[in-house]
Image (cartoon, rainbow, N blue to C red; front, side, top):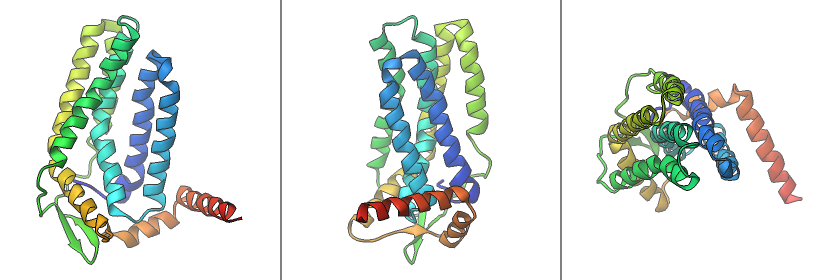
Length: 236
């Protein structure tokens, strides 16, 4: 489920940012026309990550980012492998469409699961604090997968498009499994956001720990300082 331990709060979200840069970078290398949208995407994603991790006390903001990274890494891997495999064999339009198709599939699955009734046992709310009640093992499920797919992607380049497409298809299957794994968290997060639209605000069950971590993080202190400086500049 959605974890707010120190490792996930800082390190795993940063790893998701790097994975986005790596695998979507393969798509841009194959199709340079996507460079500007890619740069804009990375800037926006970096800003959202910094705001959620270093400043915001909203559980729903962080939970949305957590789910985004965990659900998007598999289609990013698939997109990178497809682009690296077919960019010099297929027409550019076809290759770009094929590279982006995993996102459409996972996105459609996400919208379907988001509309399902939430399970009440996923989140426990106490005094506007959200506690996750179903916690998976602490080990990162993505570290080995990312390294393995990176190595397989290199092998795909050497062996041709069929191997690459097979690897991409495997990544998509993993993405579908991740949708199933987080299905209750997806519908539960939608319910929390609906409650917030009526005026409620939800924060972390361990908000004191998060505040302490932030005071010990130079990156968090720098982000807050820059935010305050920009705010003062706008007031002048």
